[in-house]
Each structure stands twice: as structure tokens, then as C-alpha cells.
Image 1 (tube, rainbow, N blue to C red):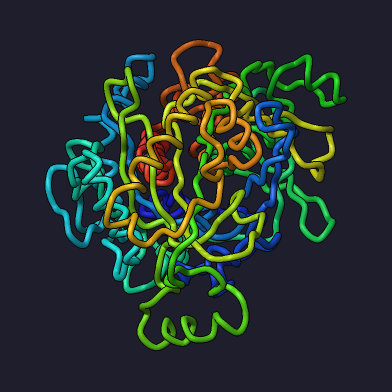
Image 2: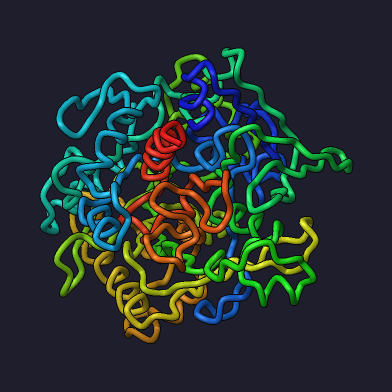
Length: 510
């Protein structure tokens, strides 16, 4: 997005440095192909350090590594969060980031196929659409949530998030519309945009307090790319703080201990990591109507051919299709997201179990646990030490258990109840809080929403200021999910797009 919006000004020259590949993998463009996007050519394939709150498991932590970043491998759900999220940013000192001030940037990106009103745009580069053929299980689960007590909500990104419904997604015509497809590919037609793929940025070159270039590695050879105006990090909540620290911008004591010369002491680089955690329930079905097994040969042939010919069927599904936003006891606004996948997805797809069924996902939208991203060594080839500190806060554990109980209440209601044979995991034998927590510790998984590791703020301790400029270094900005001062209440793709839209204007303003 940044390359597209910046290159609209013909006097600006933009170079995109991408460690991964172009988005040539066909599974990127097939909505149901996300289960094939685990390979290192398109995915950083990170894992966390052992998590004490999850029985010391190392949690699968994927991040996109191709055109479009994580928007090329995710479930395509378009959720903005709540007004209070952004008003909270502004109240914390992030001037210019209140809901009313960021709403125009959400609308600017959007080309919504159904909604055009004060909340939605219709002429932006990013297609946002209703789903073409949601599964009967997804529609039935939404109806059961309504029977449970939530109102139907036809627009989670409008006046209120509260309620049950089917998601709008960044897909159209049966194809994923990643930010690579929506923004980068059109920008590459302009003479002032160029891109280098398979090139790893390993260091920001700083001279006299200003960023002047990027040291890169390509096929084992190092070189420096120089910048005339400024350098923008848009590598996400893991790789942006990682690159800053490799460049000597971070906590001085930690850098010195690793033998990295300190360029600027910025203690909060990599700190304040926030992420959503999934606590799921897995069900067995009476009849085989789910998507299980369709990602394996020869079962994949029929849906694959259907998609090729008609752009419909299981391959056109975004898999996680709908659900509801619930309010836990004592909360004054929705703080639980509970949704369905008509397939068995255990531990983020990293564990397979026999049989057939479907999955109900749940996440506490405003977790209190807070972690960090650190360097293992001064070697850019070493994986970062990702430590979300999942479930270290008592509130997070309390809500995780409450979510399982709420899911069970919904599943007991028709029409979804009529499809269920039995509960596979955690299983009906798990009834007490301790039993449910024991299950959660073994099976909870990342929800892929890391933020806040280059936190924006008005105070000197923040990594970037409200103009997204890195404090203490001239000509350097961070424009990605890492700058969020607080985690938004829902999926983070749409808020990250908004940050890029607003960030582009901030760059143009100087």
C-alpha cells in the first residue's frame, strides 16, 4: 500500500525491498488455499519461545513473506475494531489517531461491494466483499448465536460491532485480493516504483543521527542501498523491531550484551508485544459435510477444478466465515470474538486428528498479558525470540474459560446442534475451570495479531511519535502494526491498512 500511495506523487521514487518472493504461488490467490501457505518461500515460519502459560509449548507464529505480507496468507477477514480503540489511542497522547480522524482512511482504501455510507467507501483499491458461498455450518452457527441472544449484525465495521453475522472479506470473484494484488501490482506499472525480491534487509545505516541507507543480503552477498529522502520500515510487529535492534536501535544494555554497537538507546523497542490467543472447541459431525481432507490428494481435485471453472465451491471459501462479538461479564463493550471454521483446525493447523468435524474459535479481544520480541544474537540469520507471555494475566485465563462455556451454550442450540455428533475437544468430561484451563494450556494457539512492539506515543519512552517517526533517528519511520499503542478489538489487517493510508499522508507532509 505504501508503495502505491507514495508513488502517486510522480516526484517521489519508491524502492520496495522484499525478503520473500513475488506472489506467484497460485495458492495465495485461492481463498481456500491458506492451508498450503506454510512453506518458507512465503512464510517466515516463526515460533515463540516456550510459553509457561501454555505448558511450555513453542507456539506456531506465521508471518507473511511475499508481496502483500501476511495479507497473502491470512483468512482475509476485514474487521476494523471499535471506536473506543482509536479514541483510546488519542487519549493516550497519539494526536490525530481518534476514530473520527482515522475513519476517512478506512473509507479511502475500501471498495465495498454492498455498503456505501458514512462508514464505508466504494472507490478505493481494496475490494471488500460479502462471501460468495458460505458453508451451511457457518450460517447455522450464526443463527444459533442469534438464538443464544445476540442481535444479527450486517456490518461489524459500522455503528457497532456487537452481534452475530457473516464476515466481509478482502476477496472478490472467488479470489483473494491481498494488499499485494490491490496496491502493489498496480503501483509497479509506474516508472517511479521498483521492487527487489529475495533481498533481506539486515541493518539500517545511520550516519550523524540520520538513516541514510539499508544494508541488504542477496544470495549471500552484502551491499548497501542508499535513500535520498527517508526509510520506512513496514515489516510487521516481529521483523520491524528485529531490524531496529540489529541496527543498534533498542535497549542499550541488551544490545551491548550481544555485541551490537548502540546507535540509539530506545528501551521499548520490541517491548509491549500484544497478541490475541485462540481457545477453541472441536466438534464431530453426524454427516461428512465439512471441508476436512479437501486439502489432500485426490480429494482436492474436485474443488480445485470447480474453482478453476467457476471460482466457487470450497476453494473459494475463506474458511473462517462468520460468528459473533460477545460481551463478557463486567465488560461494557464486546470483548470476545467467537467464530466458526467448517473444518478441523487444531493448534493453528499444526496438529492433525482423525475423524471429521468443525472448529469454533474464540479470542479475548483485549488481553492483559504483555510480552516482547528480542534478539537471540547479533546474527540476522537467527530467529528472533518471540515471547507473547500468553495467559500470564489472570483476566486472560478467566475469559478463556468463559469463552469455552459460552461456545458450549451456543452449540447446544438449533440449528447448529442438529449437525453435531459429539464434542471432540476438550470433550464433555472437561467441566471444571481447572479441567478447561488444562485443555486450553495444551491446545490454545496464536491468532496471528501481534502489535505494539514499536509503540507509538507522545512520551519519550515511545518508539515512534504520532507522525510515526522513530524517536532519536532522523529520516526513519515505522508504518505497520508494530506502532499500535494498544491492540484493536478484532483482526488487525484492516487497522494496519488504515495505518499505512494515514502514514503515507504523514510522509508526504514531511
